[in-house]
Image 1 (cartoon, rainbow, N blue to C red):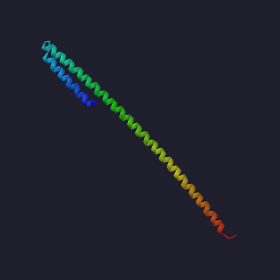
Image 2: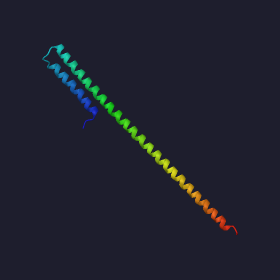
Image 3: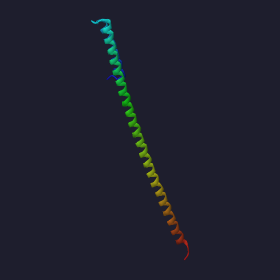
Image 4: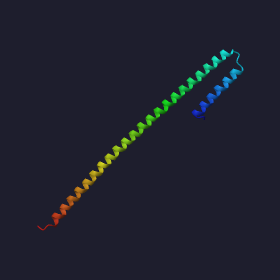
Length: 113
């Protein structure tokens, strides 16, 4: 399947070939033929401008979508990291507390009554 760039080249080549054939077999006067060619040129230019604008808008939209998705992924990652950090801090604090409690128990057991 031809890419968009190849399609554009084929379109322009077809326009050139068609215009050349029209000149060779033109049943109209020179001025009428020039007007016809100018009209076809304007139509081709308008079509090219329209397709270029559509492509630019499409790429721009996809870029915005990608930036939004990346931003959302980064934000979710930050949230996950913050939660894991909180859980780790809580686990360390709980471990410290258990250690201190056990240390106190041992100290009270070792003291003579």
